[in-house]
Length: 436
Image 1 (cartoon, rainbow, N blue to C red):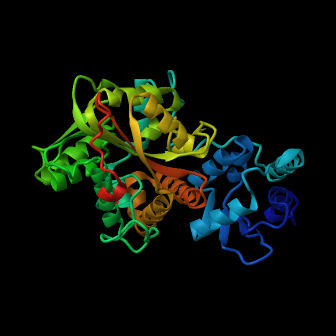
Image 2: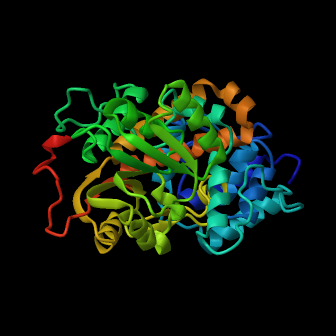
């Protein structure tokens, strides 16, 4: 690069190729130069070193950009939701740089000396998976990568409820017709979600029912069911840190006689019988190829008139989170988002009668915005607990996910199924009024 040239001058052709015009926000570079948007900027993308371009050249697409962000060679200054939305709007999913854009990217990288070495991926990247997809060992490694990062870090992000799934933002006297209410606290919204599931499962109809909570996390659903409805609960998880924390929370709440937490894979469940099963935010780890076996396993654990509530992120047509994506490499290795239509069909084939499907994607957007706020408000503590790389990963993945739920790119569905008895009886109420 010439003595009088700036980094911005080298970058501007690449930005124009990417966006088709001026970029939607301000780009600032390590030499103090910048490229300005055509209009008002929602914030700035700060490119702090040539390693950022190196990451993007060696791993084109979201993985390279994600690596640059995690490493700190790229930063976002301003409201992260507005910045990500501006970038998403300016470069829709169908957009591609094309051959001329690739040539411009390579030229900019060469001019800035970014091809002289290949930057190492920043920490917290999932190790290369081993074994067949969704085998026990591979699933255990994927779960450990995501969940065994420190219970104190999750407590900071998730708040007192320690619940890592979509909340339900409705007031206590809501009649079911009102939109999601952002004024409800996160803790109250998580309690409302747990209560909705308990009522859908019929736990309110009599005390002492036996509930299995698959993928029980830190035990919040199990504790709610036991404390409020007198349920006898078995929770299973394959995360060691979750199991330890859940047992401690249950003991402190005086619920050890009502709730048992097992460090166990769902595939080990057999020879028992339950009145109801909840699966909340765990199904994303099951995979399309194992979906039928999953529902068959749970069906075998329910007596006639027993109910299953499957609460999971969904995707139209289904989508695999691949190792070439940022989320696949840093957040959810081997994750799969399945189409809710395929889910209901698989439940029916396993012997369930599907009785209710409810979409809650707007509620998940609100949940994620609250988690991002918790993280940003305690940033220094989060970094001290989990490291800056992990904190940066969670901030951008949660913010981007919130936008996906807001625009419908991904969804969240609760699917309620029941096992009819030989005469076709289900014990189900005639309408949703029993739990709405």
